[in-house]
Image (cartoon, rainbow, N blue to C red):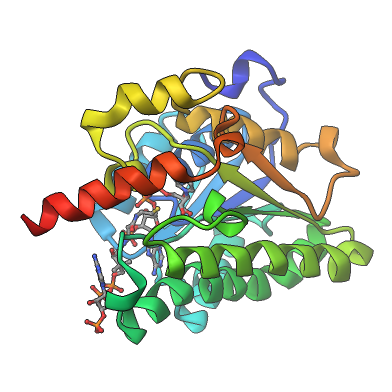
Length: 275
Ligand code: COA
Ligand code: NAP
């Protein structure tokens, strides 16, 4: 359910929201929730077809959309993307750092480049976005939302690369909140739980085990992209104007279980692949 059920439809009217990795999944869901509340949206990613389809979806909300092909690992490309978005939509009020890569890999089989690739996309990519957005966010006294993961604060099997990258993001978020608060810039992280219909869930969880997963989650359901979109809209809104430096876990209580169920499922998925 989009946020328009709960928030005034013009909450972000005239505001610009830039979502890295906004061409699909959770990030696109976040972008749609901001679009439904009147924001103009900019998205970037590496795949033109995905960006074009998502831009069309977003325009259906009547929003202005700027979509740019840019790899978050390339700081110059992001700088150009942010300049284009600024020229077309005005300076950004909200930056969502959502671009990420993930796969299951046992630490002893993960190459240095495999580890580096995920750290570069998730952590360095989020820094590149943050750094290049500074002048615009300073102008708007804007806010940054990082899309983190439970791997940031709890070890998950075969996720050494992701845990390192997302833990880095959450600590970077706190440093940015500390340093840029004086410019009126807020920074927070959102930790999604297992979100239905996403690439992340497909890569990390066996659909045959879905009933077991749902029965274990305290709220007895998987999340939706709108659950994360609603959390994002709240955190970027004036309702959250004194909230900065926080990790907001939006997972139906899944973290309360620890990671044992995930670890077992991941082991089975890797085992099945080797057969
Ligand atoms: N297991 C182990 N290592 C893997 C791997 C896997 N499943 N997939 C990729 N790697 C390694 C590669 O072998 C390579 O290392 P090497 O040079 O030592 O062989 C390294 O990672 C880079 O792979 P490459 O395919 O060149 O990376 P890329 O930059 O094209 O793509 C990924 C990045 C690998 C993260 C890719 O999965 C991706 O694009 N993901 C985006 C979507 C996504 O992950 N969504 C879920 C978000 S939660
Ligand atoms: P997704 O659809 O694959 O989203 C990742 C997006 O990032 C894609 O649109 C991808 O597009 C883009 N991207 C990847 N590498 C990039 C790069 N180098 N430069 C620019 N863009 C890049 O997967 P998702 O599951 O919705 O995940 C979205 C976010 O939620 C991620 O941060 C993930 O860690 C987090 N998360 C997801 C879950 C879940 O249940 N799905 C749980 C916890 C956290 P291209 O490949 O076209 O570039």
